[in-house]
Amino acid sequence: MTDELQPVTEQLQAESGELQPPGEPLFDPGAPLRPSGNLRRREIVGRLGTGICTAAAVLAVAVLGIVIFTVAKRGASAISLNFLIKPASLFGGPSGGIGPELVGTIVLVALAAALATPVGILTALFVTEFARGRPAQIVRAVLDLMQGLPSIIVGVLVFSLLVAGTGESGYAGSIALAIIMLPLIARAAQEVILLVPTSLREAADSLGVNRWRTITGVVLPEARAGIVTGIILAVARAAGETAPLILIDGVFNPSQFSWNPFVGNHAIPNIPVEIFTLSEQADPSSFTRAWGAALVLLAMILFANFVARLILARSARKLGR
Image 1 (cartoon, helix red, strand yellow):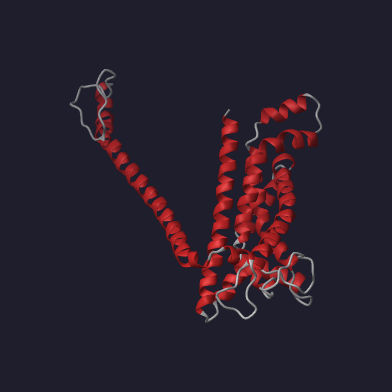
Image 2 (cartoon, helix red, strand yellow):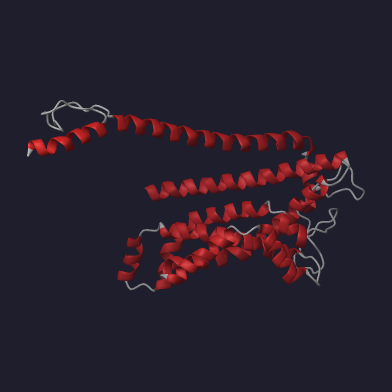
């Protein structure tokens, strides 16, 4: 029997990179462990993969740093209190501000969040708490497709439904932004709700609590911080969207404040479109104002992401306790 196993033993020893003299056992429990050729090769591949991942992460951080540095360097000279609260000069020039655009962006994004948040949370609840099998798969696929949908297509859709023949309006821009925010909020809420322990639902069921009372009294409070984080990240994404707003909320008076998005034939000033408009002008002062507006928008987005990370970290510490 030993003679029959010897070729197999030699083959295994050859594959491991270490040939042992014939007659010795293939594995000696008392012998010290030595790295084989396979182990060394795996270590090299592992270090190479770690190095590539680290380089990619450093590159991503470097790109973000270059963007922030460039925008801050070119736009810092335009930032002042008057730039943030005053409207643009009627005849242009470097003295104009972005007060109406800043207010209009807040109004548009706030209305979009008010429209997208309840729909997104209810969609997430349907997928996680009620739907099973094919319906849940279909809804998840639709959310994934909506998340990857180019924003210009959303703009064309809203333009054909709400703007063509009636004129631009603020609420049309908010609806376009809400469509962009909806899959982000729904997917974030879905992932957070799935993290709620099943034992909490089972305890509520054992007490005879109604299903909806379990959701509103147990599931949603536990997932609240994660849902808020998803909403903030969706708001940060929508605040920088330009393509749909150019089509449906792009012709406005930058020297007038506008608070009502429901006025027909009346677009609301907003920062993304103002940046695009200023960058297309030949006046050098317009470029300075465009960089300043870009710096304000970038600061808003970074602040929103920072707040979202703080809320997420606080929620993680709470769940850890």
